View (cartoon, one colour):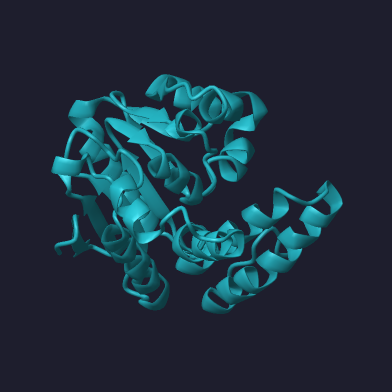
Amino acid sequence: MSDGILREDKDGVIVLTLNRPEKRNAMSVAMRQVIFDAVDDLRDNDDLRVLLLRSGSSFFTAGIDIVEHQKLYPPTRGMQEFRRDYRRNLHRFLDEIEMVEKPVVMAIGGPCLGLGVEMAGAVDFRLASEDAQFGLPEVDMGIIAGSGGTSRIVRLCGVGWAKWLGMAGEQIDASSAFTAGLVQAVWPAAEFDEQVWAFCQRLASKSADAMGVSKLAIDLCKDLDRASARVVERIANTPLILNENKRSPDKTVGQKKD
């Protein structure tokens, strides 16, 4: 696969490797389209269980390709046109990653900046090498991180860390990212690829239905009161338990047999 990303489908996992080292893996339109297409394939193909985003170099990504972006979307646009392009080209791209009912994993080594952090906010699992760094440099350009760097990161990390990254423009290392809740695991660089692959294989071995429903329920419950969230759990679990009992009629879940 050209366009700055290599793709390999292996053991139920779509592996996308950012491969544009001369631009520090800056995310071009073509690269985003490869990811977008892979999300479509993940959603529509039952043999594909997990999407893994990784880097083939020491720099995960410098963020969006600003030079290309300014050529394609000149600042002379009107406000309505600007908002339309923003939704089509950035928000929809990340929304589809967030909404697909299968796990999406990012394996982050080296600096991950701007759109890379925003993409991390949209995936399900963020795994970091000890040499990873995270930053939202948009504020230094006089703008905010507006493709989830504000809305998603504050939900993941809380107000304090969101302001540290998005308002102060400070960078954090892998240890601080773990403390902030931005990443869920940190491993030494020497064993990072092995640990990431083992994790993806564990995901691929699980029930696709259970993981998909779990993803939907978790994302919904985070915005509900406790009582409403319990209702979501009952609704979501009903078909899963009934289907499991049909497959194993001698087994009941959570009940004692006389």
